[in-house]
Structures are given as structure tokens and as C-alpha cells.
Length: 163
Image (cartoon, rainbow, N blue to C red; front, side, top):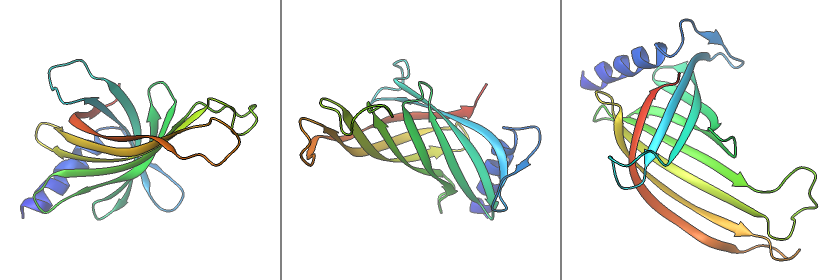
């Protein structure tokens, strides 16, 4: 019963993202934009990162997410669902690169990063926690690149309807 109530709550919140649903290819309904702000380890610090995610509902509590960071450098795709405890669970995959389409590939000194993000949010306050794991590569030559940096950090996350 609690799970159904939470699913209904999330559907109502996400439906409020857009005054009407637009049907997307594949039978889903576009519901609007969900914004994410994260604060690394401190809920009182100014947000260190913002993202806009388009939400598509496929029914039965299944949602697809696609979007980008506010600066456009990081692209995301993922899913949103409700766990057995009634919490909103989001998984996102993302990449970030300094490579431009006009560059020789890979240009010396360019970098590429790949991340996996897990977010858990309480639907009543739309606040929760995130954990990011990932790798970064920096091109020093035309040889195959090895990861140069490993990412594993988390903090506080806030979800809200985008302006």
C-alpha cells in the first residue's frame, strides 16, 4: 500500500512538470523537466552542480531520464523508479569530454570522463543522497589511454521542477 501511494505521489509530482503530456516515440509520455542540484557532503553549501533531466513515463512506475548539465558539457541518460521503502531511486550514466568535433582524435591533453550516479530521494521533501563512481582519461599521446583519475564521492541532492 505504501509503495502504491509513493508511486502515485511521484506520478503526481512529475505530472506537475508539464501542463500536458507530449507523446514520445516508443509509446512513452513526455512529462517535463526535472532539475537536480547536488552539494558535495554538505547540505548547507551552495549547490556545486545542476542538471536538467527530461522525464518520459512508460507506465507502471517506469520512467526514462535524458538530459544535460546546465553548462551543456555533461550528458545523462538513466531511469527513475520507486523502491520497496517508497523512496525515489534514480540511476544515471554520463560522460564529459573536452574533445571537439573538429579535433584530431584524441588531441593531446584532451580528457574524457565517464560516471555512474545513484540517487535516493525521499518524495516528501525531494531531498536525499547521491553517490558517483567513475573514471577520467587524459590523452598524452596517440597510444591507448589508461584511466588517470578515479572518482568516488557523494553528498546531498535536491530534486525540483525546472523553471
